[in-house]
Length: 244
Image (tube, rainbow, N blue to C red; front, side):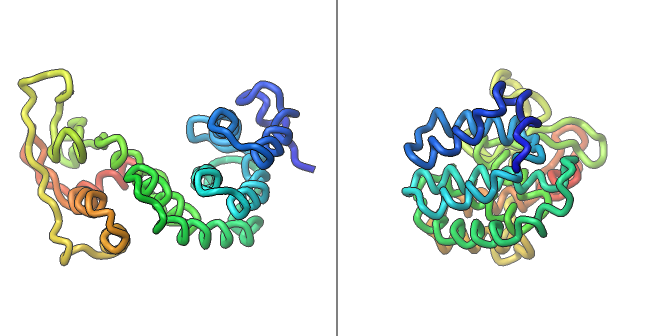
């Protein structure tokens, strides 16, 4: 039997969790999904009972409408991304291999149906989670959706903002959104032809799916930045990976 008691601190009444899953299957709505996110992946933390919800989430993803399927896939991806956190379940990927394979297949199929930029990035991150791709299964959407990554300069260790989005494409060592005199150094995007590994794969997927804005943002994510304080040129992706 699933031990829901470990989630009582996150949700309040642990015994309500199975009922909440039942309600979502019967009549999904955003408020119930928000409650479930809070219970199963509270601020990125997962618990043993979070993984026990994967079979139900797989069922919901397979049977639900487009919006419900997306909710289930994103929550399952966030849970799987925490597989290496202390949880006492053992090898999560081995225990739930059937569910993860089904979730990955559905996520691959659903990705090409999405037009919303943020939804596309979040589901792309979930796919990387199901595949067990380190770093990007947790940090891809963090900056690409919010439009900003926080990193440190590899040389002088100054805390930097890497803007990739509505504010532009640059590095800054101060709060550029609040202070007008902050120096902004333009990012150096990678040439798509020079991308390799995960950067090449993600850029290729976004381009093939017509997500041109995402594809362009990825060239900056896998390009270079210059520290405005010391002038060091560094790989943005490498620093995000190092920060993880």
